[in-house]
Image (tube, rainbow, N blue to C red):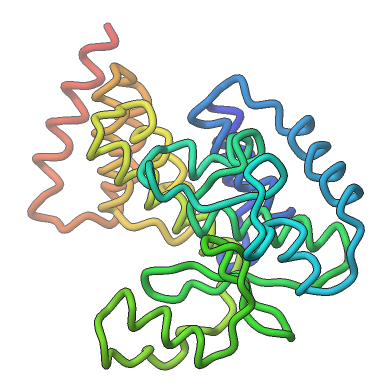
Length: 267
């Protein structure tokens, strides 16, 4: 986990939303932080092979090849996992590749990275409530058979989620920086870990959220307590010490007491 976290720190080090590397690498670092068996290079090779097998040149053809449109074939195409939406595997890129199932953001990462390999320019679009893939030709709804939407179609999707008459907030269809995509994936996994008592998932997600240059004292403290929950007291103390610099003064003594207690458990 330490090696994965160091690699993730380097990846998101710019602090401007860009990555020092590719999006698939970041998504696979997240997966490897949760599942130590993940072979990042091998999964990237699988993405290479998928792109080579598709061999398309347009956004529409890419969406059709990956998701099948109305003629979806579960054996060949990717799909949204409606039955088990909150299964953490839906957010793990290697498992999405294996099972051909995922949630919108993970399916979008897969699409963007296959597109990159085919020189098809795509970007993430963090529309409230539903992640999309943007392009010069429209927006791919990866969770719904890869249908290609225009702005009006995106507004209709938003209304189905937010209620009839709800207006899509201004800027909702702007490109989402790659580092923000990774952060959104981690928020999803942290929520799953907390809700389902998957403590190792929660610790991994909280650790990587605290690795961003703009991490707040709250995120460092959340990392600390998640690490302590699985007995990683050295990690917990170190994470909490990162929060002492910026935490409100009235809370410093309480946090320092907790750090001392974690340190004492290492003796």
